[in-house]
Image 1 (cartoon, one colour):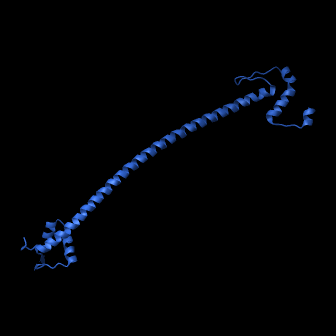
Image 2 (cartoon, rainbow, N blue to C red; image 1 turned 180 degrees about the vertical axis):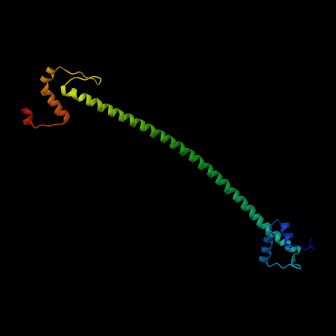
Image 3 (tube, helix red, strand yellow; image 1 turned 30 degrees about the vertical axis):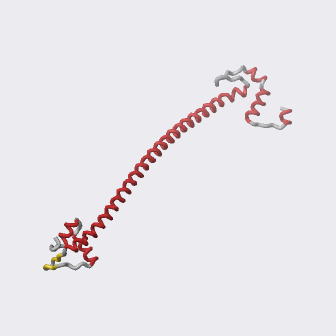
Length: 175
């Protein structure tokens, strides 16, 4: 094996690398060919040994790089998993908030309906307050015309209080 000469392609095949990688390394180290046959350069066993050392070191570096890359890929997968879990939790919270908002809207609609119903009842009750009649369950009955005339002074006072009409003490004294 020490007497044999090798071409660049043979060295590349033995080392398991590209011919261009072998060529670059030979140029970098200024290694002269042992023999030349036309356009083909032949290199001896010592050149093969030096190149084996170089590419052996670089393959060790590459294996360290491979281990580092694998570790980083594993960390990325772990972070992706954590991110997916966080997204699922956020989606769940968002759905819960949407349900709370939907329920709040229902409650607001019910509140508005109650307010409208109360306003309608108040409109119905206002005439009865003018006549000073008791009202039960939102229904009222009209009194006789004679009863309403004798309570007219009380009705005016009640209406003034309800409507917020404040009269001076002189007007209240001489109605």
